[in-house]
Length: 87
Image (cartoon, rainbow, N blue to C red; front, top):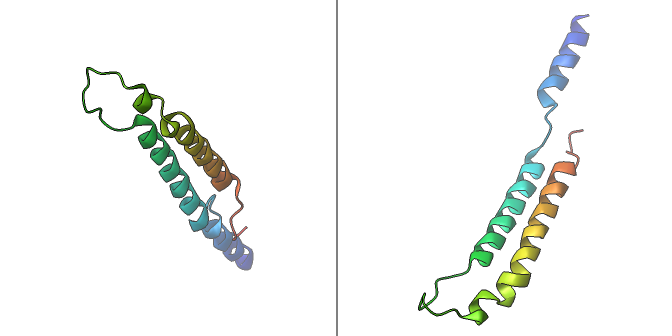
């Protein structure tokens, strides 16, 4: 009976939902999402009174930044669904 309690106590301490690898992938995904939002925000205009379509509708803001955000969410889903090595 005491041996059975020791086995359940040993597995209870090692029964975590995520391991170090999952958290690493989550941080990578979060970094990619933040990078995408920063690229989408862009920089300052030299003159705020002039509307420059080249800056507002640039390839970085319209195409690359949303793709990075979507890639970040895909990485987050992978990090959540990835099985830990201990299980």
